[in-house]
Amino acid sequence: MRRRPLLRTLGSGLALGSAGLASGHPTATSDGTPPAETPDSQPLGTVSIENVREMVLNLDGTVAYVATVDGFAVVDVSDPTEMRVLARERLLADHADGPLSGIWDLHCDGDRLLVAGPANGGRDSVRGFGYVDVSDPADPELLAEHEVDFYTHNCVLADGVGYFTGGGLDGSPLVVADPESGTELARWSVVDVDDRWAELPFGMVNLHDVWVHDDRAYLAYWDAGTWCLDVSDPGEPTLVSRVRGRPLDDLLDVTNRRRERTEPPGNDHFVTVNETGDLLGIGTESWAAASGSTGPGGIAFYDVTDPAEPTRLGAIDPPPTPDPTRGGVWTTAHNFELVDGRCYAAWYQGGVTVHDVTDATDPVERFHWRDAGRGKFWTAQLAAPGEFFLGASIGAFGVNTAADSPLESALFAFPDQRPADGAPTTDGTRSGRASTPTSETGAGAGVGAGLLGLLGAGAWCRRRSE
Image 1 (cartoon, rainbow, N blue to C red):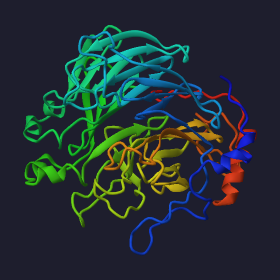
Image 2 (cartoon, rainbow, N blue to C red):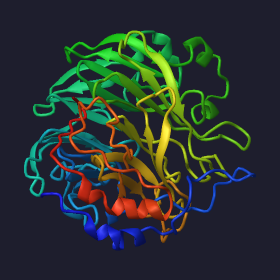
Image 3 (tube, rainbow, N blue to C red):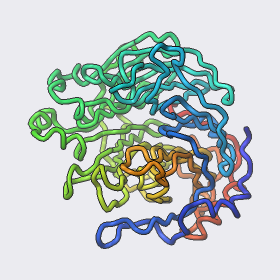
Image 4 (cartoon, helix red, strand yellow):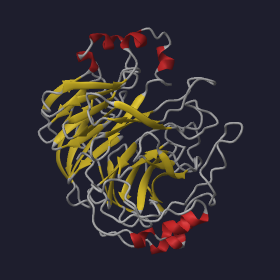
C-alpha cells in the first residue's frame, strides 16, 4: 500500500470540510462563546466507520487500526483523500458470553496488535483481550485471545508485553501480562505505596491510562495524579516517582467527592512521551460540575530526562466553549501524540490542534480545525510528516442528541503544515521527510495543503513504544 501523491487535494480536498475557509485561529468572542465553526484549513478526506474510538497507526503510517466497540477495523490511509476499510474483526466470538464488546482501546507495536475491553464495567458479560498478527493488514491473524477478571479502558503493547488498566480490581492496578500465553506477570497499584488510597472512591482514584517507553511506565491515575514506574523487569514494577498530584491528605479531606472527580485540579486522563522519552505530556479530561466552576482541562508538559526528578514546563489551554459542563459542548483534552517536535491533540468538539513543542515551556499553535457540529475527536496521530495527520471522530457518543446527529463517526485526514524555512522541528532523530512550507491561514492554507504531497519524500518508521 504505497502512499499516492496528493495532487487531487488542490481541487476536491478544499471542499471536504463543512464550513468555509477562515482567517486566523478560532478564538473566543467577548461573551466567551466559540466563534462560528470555521477552520483554518479543510480536511483532505474522510472515511466513515461506525462506533470509532481509539485509533493507532502502523510502522509506516499507511494503515490505521481503529477500536470500534464490537471489535476493530483496519483502514488503508496511504492516500488520505481515498481512505478505505480493509477489514473488520471481532474477538472472543466463540465464548459462551461473547463476543468481546465495549472495546475502546488498542495498541500496535511492529506487526502485533493488542485489543482489549470492555472499557468500563456494567453489563458487559465477558472481559478480555486479543493478540493479533497484522503483518498482512488486510488479513489479520488472531494469535491468542484471553478472558480476564478486569475491564480495560486503556492498554499498551511494548516489546511483547501487555500493560492493562485493571478496572474493577481493588486499587485499580496496572496489570502486566504476556499477551500470547495470557500469563499474568505483575500488578501494581498506588495502594501499594500507601493503603489509604483505598479509602477514596474509584471515581477519584482509577488508573485511566498507561504509557510505556523503554524501561519506564507512566500511569495516569485521575485525581491521584501521574506516576512513573521502572518496568525493566515487567514482572516486578517499582516506583520511580510521582510526577504530580495533590497530597493524599488533601484528597481524603474532600467532602464533595462526586463533584471532585469531574473537574480540576486532578483528572489525569492520558499520558505519553516523545520519541526520546524526555518530554512527558499529561492530558486532563475535566468538565465544570456546575455553572461557574472550573473546566475544561488542557495538556501539561514535563521534562522527564531524569524521571526521578520531573520538571514542569508549559501547557496548552483547551479551546473555548460556551458551556464547560459535561452536558455542554465538550472541548476538554482527550488523547494526543508527541512526535517530531509537535503535539497532535484531540479536544472532542474543540477539534484537533497541532502545537510546536520544541520549546515545551512555550507551545506554539500551528494548526487548528474545529467544527463542533461535525466532529468530536478522540485522538490525533501523525501519519506522514509534512503531508498529513489523522483525527478520529467518535460521532454522537456521549451527547444527548437525536440519532440523526450530524456528528460523524469517522477518520479525518488533515494537512501537516511545516516551517517555511525548511528547518527541522527536532534534532532529526525521527524526521525522515523534508520539511514543507507552512501556508498562511485561510484560503492559502488549503492551497498549501494541496501541495504537500509533492514535497514529502523518503521512508520513515514510527514505533511509539521506542
